[in-house]
Length: 256
Ligand code: 6PG
Image (tube, rainbow, N blue to C red; front, side):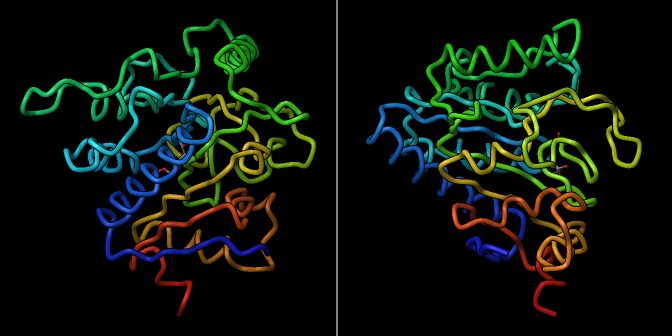
């Protein structure tokens, strides 16, 4: 097992604020080096607190918003306005005007959702991969986009992105991205669109957001040497370029 950086914060809010600070640091470095920051964010419920932390005036003032482009590691194959969409928390927390009426610091054109209005998954995947190339996102020789920072969450089954245990997207040599049938073992039971695990290796840096007692069992499996990536795909993020942000509740079984 390669060793990532593991930080244990007091609670979920601490994880959100630490992630926001990491994003600002990565954005500043990316813009200094290449004039642009390509952030690939995650789905689920965890990022909402992170987006709120980024909106706080002291942090928002440090973010190079005009040079930031936001992508998604996966999404549910539902309309953007659907509450299940992974874009919904970002629309609500980052793109909307703030409670005191301050406009969003982010341009809507800088947010790149998966094209879930497409007729079918292969069409949506092909269009998204084309959009990444058109936007000038660098790619590896094997066709994976090189994000400056990739955020992932982990599910109770040890998945990340929409790469579930046993998924072909967890295998070496998997295609860059694909449609994923609706999972039956984990909510929500809707089809997905997702990059395969290779996107973790191609990213310049990865942050895993994993707060809360509900992640403790999955984290214990992921950090257990005997667990295979195929059985807990988030294990693929145990790399030196990754920082795992846990809290005391989710880390409880790691140091027992
Ligand atoms: C998704 C996500 C998924 C998520 C984890 C954690 O589409 O659901 O991309 O990988 O990050 O399931 O979800 P929570 O943050 O809601 O616990």
